[in-house]
Length: 167
Image (cartoon, rainbow, N blue to C red; front, side, top):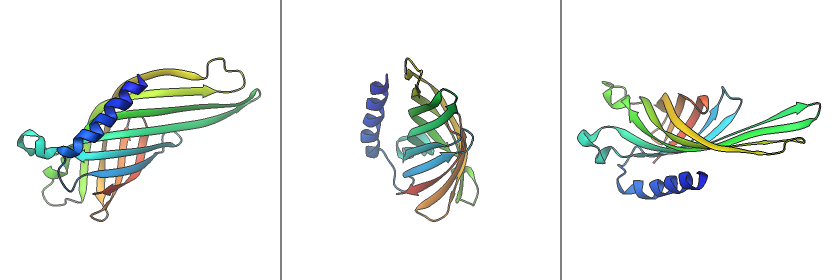
């Protein structure tokens, strides 16, 4: 399952620049507050030029990682997961009358998740691969033409804050 998701994401990343519009593509990093430190990296490619009526749609490809240590009387245990996914993001910023610096958005997609649990008395450290529906909503604020602040809520990282570098 994990190899299929990775192959599909890489194929999408390779093919998407052919339909990408100029000016709204970005690479970003983010940090989740709700789940004690989910760290993520995402890339967004604007595909609005290939959409009917030039709808402001972006494709987001992401990776998120979470790791937490637990101390117990038996020793130190660690739980971690990696999530890979892709989502279609609708940029509502084009609907705002004047202020184009604020860009609210919402998106939906799919993700694959691999979890790992390890410790002194764990018989099977690797968890099963799983996946599901990814849902996100938030807003970006353009600090400069090349840098945007991003605040969003999603079902993997919870409340996250990040920085996007636009190209």
